[in-house]
Amino acid sequence: MAQGSMFPDLNTAYAGGGVYEPEVKYKLYDSGAVSVATFLGGPIAGAALMAMNYRKLGKTGAAMGALGVGVIGMALGIAVGYLLPSGASYAVPIALIYGMRQFAEKTQGDLIEEHTERGGQLGSMVIPVALGLAILIPVLAAIFLPVMMQPHNQVRVGTKDMVVYTGQASRQDADDLGQELKRVGYFQDQGAEVFLDKDAKGATISLVVKDGWWDKPGAMDAADEVARQVAKSVGGFPVRVRLVDIHKQVKKSGSVGHSYAGPDDIYFYDDATQENASALMEAMRRNGDLRGSGDTTLLRKRDGVTQISYVLGMPYWNEAARVRGFEQSTRAVAYSVGGLPVTMRLTDNSLNSEFEEVVR
Image 1 (cartoon, rainbow, N blue to C red):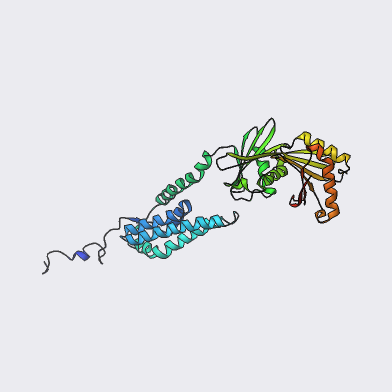
Image 2 (cartoon, rainbow, N blue to C red; image 1 turned 90 degrees about the vertical axis):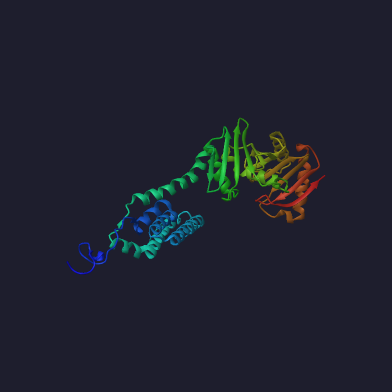
């Protein structure tokens, strides 16, 4: 027996000799696994997988850092996806997956290589898939459950504007109204909400407005004009229109009707009736004011005030003689709408008031 220790050198006791290294029993996940987790659950899932690697290697601080990167990446991805046009937003998840893969390769690539050289194994795709789904499912639930729980009697126009329909109104009615509101510029994808109700008497359009907006000068006139422009989409005239608050409480209301005389039109608003409009039309015809040239006249009765507006394609409000002619016509037909005084307005084709006076 050789002199010295009775035990052979423990560093060379196993077959093959060399330095003894303990068996690697844990598994790590490479950049491919991180990519799969990111694909399913976003950067947070990929970062969580990287954090698992670090914890197995005893690098707690690095694990927390990886999770922080995942949270930041997720937040940036959501922000950029929201700001980009819908056609370009598909690039966001691709960029996130690529970014997380590169991040994993740069920070853990050498660690993974060393692990495998020591005989360590890579984890299967079960954990990355499960981790990604564990994050994906709650995210999808948060997105879609509120949508599923919302009433089905509504139509979204764009991404934010909405028409809610009740009564005899159909989904098609709501969709047609929404498209018309978009066409005339009322819907601008800023979260506007409109209610549509239909009954045997016709349609009612309720515009949800900010607190106090209904008291602004011209607010009801503007609402009436919106209703006039979209009336065909809800079955035609008459149309009732309301201004309501966010609690759906009616603050002001009016209505819009239409009388047609050949190519000439008379629209009547609020307390004015079809009989008033017909009487005005007949009086204007007798007075020679309706000549079949496509003239438009507006009759409004509200709070005891009668208003007749002449819609002009030319700036006749700048010509004194023309203005006197409209004054004379207004006096001549005033009896048909209850008599004088009558507020006379001259407007452009967009119904902007260019001249107004009380005719007595």
